[in-house]
Length: 369
Image (tube, rainbow, N blue to C red; front, side, top):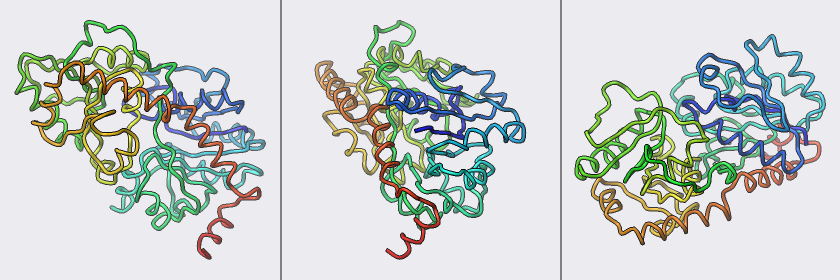
């Protein structure tokens, strides 16, 4: 298949979770024999933090203005088999209008931020990627979040055919490596600052740091405010490119995952960082949300905590116990949650669509059912 994507970014991993996921998925799709063309608006904050300049075997098209790239987009869509718009695409509404005229492509929307999308739209806010027709013009809507989010995409946004396509990891990028002294920690946390994560970060990371002053705590990320409540034993390293993630996770005795509030409340929202950390052989401590047990077995493949006391208890576990969690978590990821697994799921979902699929016909069939 020729797959044309209009997305947020694949070229810069700075301050977003899209780029790493797209790199792994594109690599897997290319390995399976497909071709990928990715359109990305060249915005300053990604341009100054760019850590990928080309898609090996595919094509990355950077553009500064939609009108400048419109003819190129039409040309690429002319023989496309799949045409996709993603959440947070700066020109998503315009790209959707263009997709409706694609002569042969199956039209796909991929929301990598479903709970945030729904909460914004239900609050009356606008987005750059979903227009007044909602998702009615797509043959298939993929969601990074499963569970109840799928029904809300149908009922609220008119999606006709909905399926989850969860996060994943590329083991050729994320794998165990030798620890590096600057990243060695008893508990680490890798993530961009988000206000709606701060409550759980305080409870599961900052408060435990206060209770274990002789242990080393490490945060890696971007956009942390000046008033962040640092403690003497909490260290910071600026945003890390994906190439540094294996060293970060491999140097952590235990690493923390904290889910954004809207996603945690909706559930069924495994962060790509969960799979990255497990693939690197890290023992993971995570906040708890509905559906997490479908991706990792709590207590065996992942540790869960909702209080500071539970986080401290995880820190106090014997090394042999944490070693068992590391091995079991990595085995689970490699058997179920790699980029190749998701690429194969994507293939099956596209193949399951009717040969002459159209969003209107799928919508009619859904209403009749």
